[in-house]
Amino acid sequence: MEVAGCGDTRAFFRELCSKIGSRRSGGQGAITWFLQRLGQVVEPRSDHAGPWYQPFITLDHEAHFERLIKAMHDDRKRRWAVLIDELPIFLKALHDKGQDGVVAARNFMNLSSRLRADYPCVRWMITGSIGIEPLARAGEYMGVLAKYQAYELQPLTHAQAMEFVQDLARQGQLTHRQSITDAEAQALVAAAGWRVAYYLDALAQKLSGDPSDDPAQAERLVEQAASRLLEPAEAAVFGTWEEHLRKHYKDPERAVAFAALAALAPHSTGLTVDTLLATINRADLTRDGLFSVLKRLHVEGFITVADWDGDNPTIAFRNPLLRRWWHRYRPTSNA
Image (tube, rainbow, N blue to C red; front, side, top):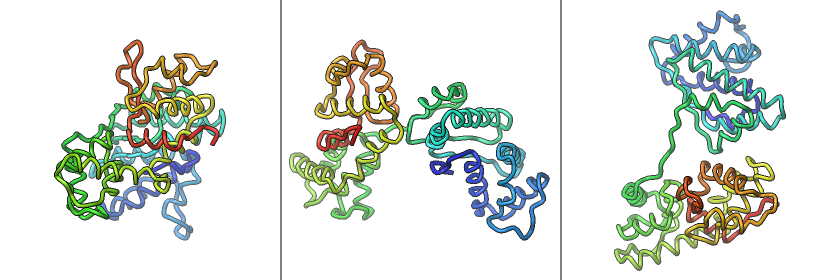
């Protein structure tokens, strides 16, 4: 379930019930079984309005949530997994309510930790587009995160990336091309730099002209595609990164993040931390303070760091196309 729109724990619980109710492909028996197990809590009225779970949402949602997980754990006919997308955004919505919200977030994470321990037959996976660590530090639930096993999603290999863009053409998913040569695939992968499907697809969509096996011509065609991708009309392809900073960073961290990215954008090979600190030139910014912001930007995919253990590591944009967009349009924290 995707919980970015949940503003409190009751909404989270309601979404969980809704998702379970929608899993009818496994047979009506699963729904009936859940209703029977939960019927011991309350006797639903047969004439109630709304979806099947409506009688339950007025209960203590934490207690009911636990009963639901226990029912999954006790099911001997099926194995259950709870897949929660955008959990950090849900937690941030709680944090934004003030201290009571922070406490609610901490309680929710502690509850999830206990449920995972008490009912191990239910597997959990959480994902998110923003960093959860800053929230966990502020809410003092880092210990809960330590009990999860982290999986970092890696970019495609070079060979996979080439096959991906060529498959897009072969499968008729590109507007202007039915084929992409090996030379063009090489040039597309090099121009994209960060080998993730979204930006490989976005760049390949802009490729036009007759296919060419000549490396120099292929590079020219791909550069023309990149120029089209960086036009103002394509701002939505990159603008989500700027929006992310505005939504999920608070000053002074937000101002430092924008200043750091603005300083890095003109440099394709990046800057050392010391040079970056001097370029930002904020009297209130220490080296440790900059490192704190850079670590968050690194986790969230904005930048790459050559060697965190080095005395003066080099910092660069992770996505070369995003770097070019940022350099061209120069987003600022007060825009």
